[in-house]
Length: 106
Image: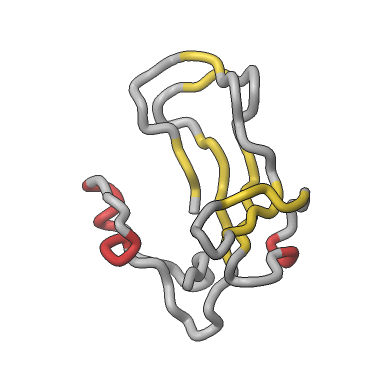
């Protein structure tokens, strides 16, 4: 999943999360676990890989790519659905269809 800036704002990034593996605890909190940049390093369904594109000192504008979030798939072909994940799509997103090989989420 690509993460983009949606604010109508021009400025400089002052803080940005590190690239690497993040782990979700049983209470739902998420914390940085370790550095990696390969999606194969995700060891369980409780982990995700975040790859940062925009870092501290970079300029920030609406539509800028902030990073990519990758999670392990269920292995049964299930894909993320915005309505089930609580995501809001704009008119452009609603026209898109999942492609073969798209990111799988549980």
